[in-house]
Image (cartoon, rainbow, N blue to C red):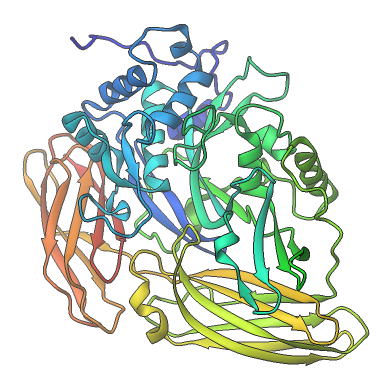
Length: 563
């Protein structure tokens, strides 16, 4: 029999989850809608998300998940936010104990819903409660959305945070290692077990850390995306943000892994002719380029998701000191010292050739892209460089889907000279491969023909997808009366959009809807009318997501006032 009441965390001054800025609790505990951010640090888009922690059945689902995580035993740890948040990071993924959601990055989701199709946690948790089986499928933003819902339902202040250029350090070296073939000018992908995610969404939860020394209270990172095993299970955190900031990789839990995610140096290794390895480049500012969460205003998100600067609270300085300052370098050195698997022979390489990749900030998918590389000789001697430029279509986790361009490059640079290489990319070369993630990775590898030194640079660019526009036909919206909404956007591709669906979810309305949509011709408008009936008065946000074979995840949000 389900209990008639639950004891939740509360914000008395002596409570372990007491949040000193009570005004922000309207966001971190009470706001049932919000967004997470995607793309790259210079091309940020927003994913609207309906947390719905106050919807019927969601608290019960949360408590059932917690009981499952604690093996259905009533233990004192269930009153400790450290143990509760760590349990949530484990039970939201399905790896160990048939938790809430199955993670999948394969691109093939035939026996479930595509990860990008979800617009909220309510549908996920209700499906889990109904079937008793893990929901298929999710990726980092879905895991983070469900974690936010569960934490806020329990009274734990929680926010999703997007880390742009997020390192996945698989070997505990606290560096992101990339391996290159010295003679073939190619990346040795089979050896590159580390990866760079263009963005990754995790959560921070506010609590006191009575289990740690002074200075580690406040925001703690937890991450439900199943990446690495911790303590024999797929759990991550809580790790104090203060420990991550200062490279204190000896502080529990999983601080070494999370420090690398936001502040690892990207180290490029070249295999020499004698099969030894040599550091050819170190990028000290490659990871954690920007960390963002929604502004703590307690309000729903606006309709514009492409231009979302007004929604962003930049919290980068909470996680890392300013790049390349003494304090930031000191934290990297300390992290390397405290991580037993870190390599100690990395920081002896100095480059005299500097290469920077530049690209556009606002190109719609389906259009040509102009990319350039600036090469600068920082020495007084002439340099003759030869190499290749690679342009690849990648997923947001850095996985290569296709190589759309390989171009030879030759360059002579006089002393202290700077030159520009232009790299035009035709839409036809990438358009067949951008269904799940419209992202391009540009790599340039150049060799000094006289000295046999290698130089490398990489950058990732996001191609913009359209916003889903939502308009209401009704002059006023009333309880138990049908409301008609028109969803629309312009197809930016030179081909029809087929196998199309529209997902719609809202607080206070019908159950989440899945609607088939007719094909949309090339360069034409997609339109679809949706009817909803609201059972509760007040302001409600409507979340919608268009999904098709050729273009994944065109999202929109719209607010209505129901009388």
